[in-house]
Amino acid sequence: MQKKLNVQNLYKIFGSRVKDALERAKDGQRKDRIFEETGAIVAVNGVSFGVRHGEIFVVMGLSGSGKSTLVRCINRLIEPTSGTIEIDGEDVGSANPEQLRRIRRDKTAMVFQHFALFPHMSVAENVEYGLKVRGIEPGKRREQALDALDMVGLAGWADTYPDNLSGGMQQRVGLARGLAVDPQILLMDEPFSALDPLIRRDMQDELLALQKRLGMTIVFITHDLHEALKLGANVAIMRDGRFVQIGKPESVVDAPADDYVSAFTRDVDRGRVLTVGSIAKETVPLVRGRDTPKTAATRMVNGASNALHVVDREGRAMGIVTAHSLAGETQPKELDEIMRPDFPRCDPHALLSEVYKECSTGLPLAVVDAAGHLIGVVDPLEVFSQLIQGDGSDGHAKPDSPNDRPASQNLAVKQDAEA
Image (tube, rainbow, N blue to C red; front, side, top):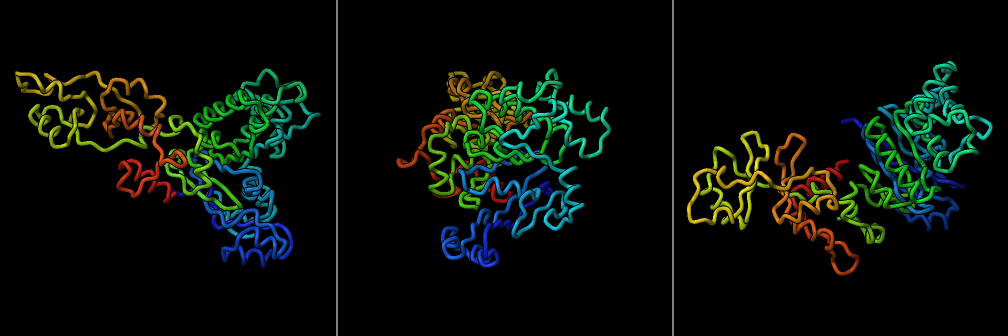
């Protein structure tokens, strides 16, 4: 699948001797040494990534890591020094002024940290601004502005002025202004960092709901790891202008690339990041109408298991057979005689913190897709093990090899690498 946004080998260098500094950066010289010897600052250092349509891609880093410079290079508010930026295959870097205006007008919108609202304009007029630049006639842009304000719960404040709104409400206006132009890519530079914690959480939830509803493609910049892990389909950790790790939130937490990432993730609540699918293991279930209690007993002995799930011939989970149910004096002839139809099940995208109740049964969890097909199982003890596991130093387990990970996790790691 073609990426909606594709960035390759992007560099941004400020100061003098830019060409010399660029060559040094490409040769792998450290940022601090380049500054000492050339006086140039390498703000973005050979960054490459892609964002699929409808994905929230989060870039997380501390102040000075280069993340805000990076996002401004995407729409050339800051001119890149080297590298390529493509939106739907169109080269942004080589666009002439007229083409660049069209790209900014029709393909991207930006939401800033400090709202950037015009105080002399009403809320609706602020939201209409991008539509006015596009040349949309007044009646139509008013209608679109009101629709956008309705999405963020501010339709009733259209004719008030920004000074009458709280910080959280002003940021909603900034978000509505971005939504009003129906951008193909929404660029968000630490949009919630100036908000109080409770308002910030509400805005995060609202953004996720809007993204799910509208299928927006978003590049989101933050210095808060918890925010990054909550919002991102994929998360990039940035340091000294480079990406030190890109991956799904669960892989960043469960397998940090280095000590720098590990230090960030040490205090993360793993139960609110890791998904059931990330620890699910493949299974060979019993098939209703084909397998028998004798088959079940043999498999349990050979596989050192005390329970097996039962599926129909289409692979839909129907029940579970336990070793206890096979232990009676009278041997049943059909699986239906001993199959329990009440068994714990969950979605692969469920967070570990959401399945504590299911784990309390002691039975393995059936991981099923939307159609009820069995796609894996999770031992309840594995859920709790994931929440407390550590290597004695930084609180994180680090698999010695791919064979130490469940099959689903190997697949997730492979997909992260390919992304």
